[in-house]
Image (tube, rainbow, N blue to C red):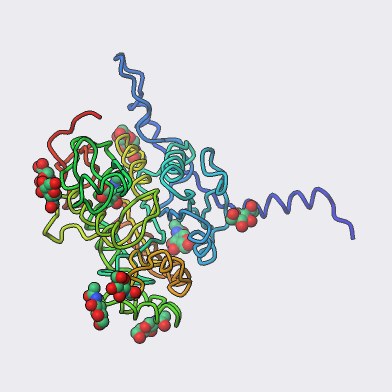
Length: 404
Ligand SMILES: *C1O[C@H](CO)[C@@H](O)[C@H](O)[C@H]1NC(C)=O
Ligand SMILES: *[C@@H]1O[C@H](CO)[C@@H](O)[C@H](O)[C@H]1NC(C)=O
Ligand SMILES: *[C@@H]1O[C@H](CO)[C@@H](O)[C@H](O)[C@H]1NC(C)=O
Ligand SMILES: *[C@@H]1O[C@H](CO)[C@@H](O)[C@H](O)[C@H]1NC(C)=O
Ligand SMILES: *[C@@H]1O[C@H](CO)[C@@H](O)[C@H](O)[C@H]1NC(C)=O
Ligand SMILES: *[C@@H]1O[C@H](CO)[C@@H](O)[C@H](O)[C@H]1NC(C)=O
Ligand SMILES: *[C@@H]1O[C@H](CO)[C@@H](O)[C@H](O)[C@H]1NC(C)=O
Ligand SMILES: *[C@@H]1O[C@H](CO)[C@@H](O)[C@H](O)[C@H]1NC(C)=O
Ligand SMILES: *[C@@H]1O[C@H](CO)[C@@H](O)[C@H](O)[C@H]1NC(C)=O
């Protein structure tokens, strides 16, 4: 059979028009003209926002690697791929649903990938993210006092724990026998003193009202409980949370390129996070999950918020627990064996629960766009970084820090 080439091209054009109902975002040229950047000062600012951007997604789901991405691509109608310069070579494209309201992006793993991918994405002129909500949805190690395999956590604080001095056990134990790990803060000489200087990315605080709404929505979902092997592994622990079925928990997340586990480092970093967030002895900060990207992504969001390119109050960090960060008592002397025990393997439950617990929030943003989300969910808590870069007064940190 032969086709007329014109008919084929026409059919192709028609189908691509139908398949890409791309509605360019409306722009207000009067407003843009008024915001002309060419003033006479020597402090020329780049344009505030990106008035000629084409895409303005309402929700962006941020994954870190393939296993976190794929269940979203399967669950929703992500039919459009868009290549973005500066994304990870492993994940060069973002994905849009049919009507371009939901976007998915994958950063690549670790702090460097997360920071550079989010920066590239937010600066791309095709996208206007000034009103978009971001759901960072990834898996993490879990603290057994608050979580178990498959648990879903939503953070208020994100603490980067790797930014410290570190010395090996064999080199401090003779002189500093009461140190519990080789870590201590910048500009000080022991692990119990608040750092004298910071790089600015140590602690981020997110919109608690938005976080609590996401928690409430996630609680309406029926979580994946994991496998029989997961259930047996949970039973090895003493803590009630670790022994129970997975739940949705409001608690805080750590970022560290250094993938740590075990009681010694978990105890040390828990205490460090409490010190950094000024919450020692209170439950203002509750460490429960450890992963490798959030602070890096948050730093990129914060910098772009300063220029109106995103709204830092619209970022949610959700981490589902794929494995425990501490061994159970029966593995007390074999932390490496514990880590490599495939039986705890909660990867399938944690991956499934990313979509199960994240989807209600995504749908809520679309359903209540006009009455709630377009205007924003106002935070009552401090949001931002340790340097108070986007304003407000942090409930942690110090009045000033030495310059490193
Ligand atoms: C990482 O982000 C968390 C908030 O999610 C924040 O509390 C923490 O201070 C950040 N840490 C670093 C080192 O940036
Ligand atoms: C466009 O912007 C101008 C200046 O800010 C404003 O007066 C006008 O109402 C805007 N028009 C629309 C349709 O929003
Ligand atoms: C879009 O991206 C997904 C995920 O990388 C891929 O599986 C799919 O083949 C791509 N589609 C097109 C049309 O390139
Ligand atoms: C876009 O599609 C989503 C489903 O993916 C739907 O919930 C939403 O209402 C649609 N929005 C518009 C403006 O059509
Ligand atoms: C650790 O030992 C030093 C003396 O070597 C002492 O000054 C310090 O108070 C001790 N710290 C703690 C938390 O026990
Ligand atoms: C998980 O377990 C709970 C309690 O037994 C049960 O109510 C729920 O239906 C289970 N969820 C799934 C997806 O099987
Ligand atoms: C955990 O429970 C076991 C048995 O019930 C008990 O022997 C052990 O002391 C407990 N360990 C901790 C750290 O509480
Ligand atoms: C771990 O080692 C200590 C000291 O040798 C011993 O008392 C304890 O029974 C061991 N625990 C396990 C679970 O093997
Ligand atoms: C946090 O703790 C440090 C060290 O104890 C202290 O210097 C600082 O003032 C505290 N910050 C707040 C906001 O309470």
